[in-house]
Amino acid sequence: MDYIHMTERLHVGHTPDPPASSRSSSSGEDGPSFGLQFAAFARFGDAKSQGRAITLSNTEKWLRQAGVVDGLRVTTTDTAICYKQVAKTKRTLVPREFEKFLENLALQKKLDLHEVKKKLTLCGLPRTTRTTTP
Image (cartoon, rainbow, N blue to C red):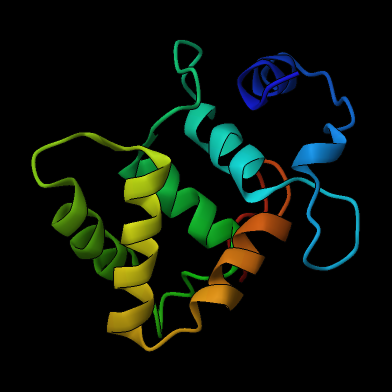
C-alpha cells in the first residue's frame, strides 16, 4: 500500500501498521517514515488533499507539534519567511521543495537539519489538542 492510500485510511480514523518499507530505519524502531508524516500533515484538515503537497498552515502545525517551533528560537514568522522563499507565489510545497524549506530554516536558525527531520518523523500523526506547550 503506498503512502497516499495509507493516509486516506488514516484520515477516516483507521490506524493500520505502516508498510515495512516506510518504517523508520535510522533509529531501529518501527514507526512512520518522514514521507508518511509529510502525507499525513499535508492532508490534515483538507478532505480533498491527496497528501502530495503541504500548505504553510499545516507546515507550521507540524513544526509546532514536533517542537521545532517554540516561539523563542524558532517562530512562525521565521517559518513563514523561509516557506515563502521556497514557495514564491505557490500555495503549497511538494516533498522536494519542503526539504529545501527545511534546509533553509535550519541554515538561517542554526539548527541541526538531521535533528529537525528526526523530530518531524517521530512527533506522531497530526492531532488537534496539546500541540503547543504551556
